[in-house]
Image 1: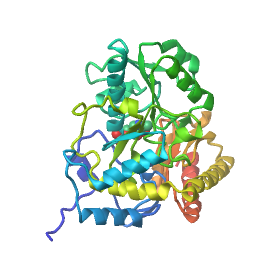
Image 2: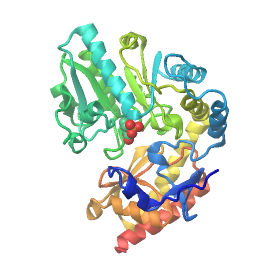
Image 3: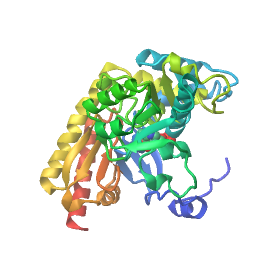
Image 4: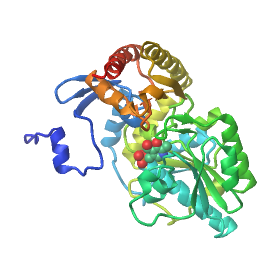
Amino acid sequence: MTDQLQVNRATFDEVMLPNYAPQNMVPVRGDGSHVWDQDGREYIDFAGGIAVNCLGHCHPALIQALQEQGQKLWHVSNVWTNEPALRLATKLVDATFADKVFFCNSGAEANEAALKLARRYALEVYGEEKDQIISFKQSFHGRTFFTVTAGGQEIYSNGFGPKPGAIDHADYNDLASLEALISDKTCAVILEPMQGEGGVMPATPEFMQGVRALCDKHNALMILDEVQTGFGRTGYLYMYQSYGVEPDILSTAKSLGGGFPIGAILTKNHIAEHLKFGTHGTTYGGNPLACAVAEAAFDIINSPEVLAGIAKREAMFREKLEQINEKYNVFSTIRGQGLLLGAVMNKEHEGRAKEFIAASIEQGFMCLVAGPNVVRFAPSLIVEEQDIEEGFKRFDKAVARVVAGD
Ligand SMILES: Cc1ncc(COP(=O)(O)O)c(C=O)c1O
């Protein structure tokens, strides 16, 4: 083997586009809920690669699936199908409302496919007048131009010229606001059952049920974006299962691959048939490596023990955060569900969430923000009890530093 090129954080600024601003350390190795950087420093990871590493880092079952598939078949394209894709699709169909699956490589691609399918369905079944897509303020659906325009944060979609049209935004958790926009011209309503990037904000049951009823009334499809909430994150395989409301199309990615890039949409037969041969596609979607890893992740996540363990861990997280808050009085509330939790800054610390992330890194702890006011936690769904203890000891120190103004 030739000597490897030496690189570090400074290399990023030299050779990478500046659309990211990575933290000032480079992770090189992970194991469960632990990560080590180039200097051998260890961190407890409750960021989970932004709600992706559902089984932590380097889970043995995922390594085995990757290695076994890696020695068999990596890629054939969708000119052929493959066994891992067919097995994974079968398992997803058996475990959900869906009859059919389309695979892609990311959350944005999944939502792009969902929105295109909804438009195609409405066009073919009702005619070209029915093209309106309704989304919600503060939502996030990805960074392709269609999905970022559907997203409810203009800061992400402005500055790229003319946007895709016929997209409107209602207020989240406000049925009257949706009712004011929806009509028989609406082709789809897209929403996250819990807004992730928008601040870890769950939909109320009345809102979810109301959205379903309004969609039914106006023959609009209900698209649930479960990219962040799906695949066990909230203690259910998919969060819709906790509301007793079924979507028409569901998008899933992030945790689905446990860290290997994969996305998918799930839908019913009468909708699926409108994505006819040749209407949509992707070279890599459903590739054998991604599907083999996702299947291994599915087999672990979709078990009563693992799903029940998420609620237990949630209780521990909430207790630890409440204890920290009693000491330092920094949060107004802890919200979320399962292991997607947000600690919301109180008035005194408004806009300071980012400072908690930087202070946490210094204490060997990784977490996320969700907007300027929320510290977000999206750890491994099987995070060990002792790692929760140790992680929050470190976070406690980080909070102390921020409060002291160090
Ligand atoms: C709810 C939701 N939808 C879509 C996306 C986009 O997924 P990706 O970054 O894989 O394209 C994200 C990413 O954060 C998300 O949280």
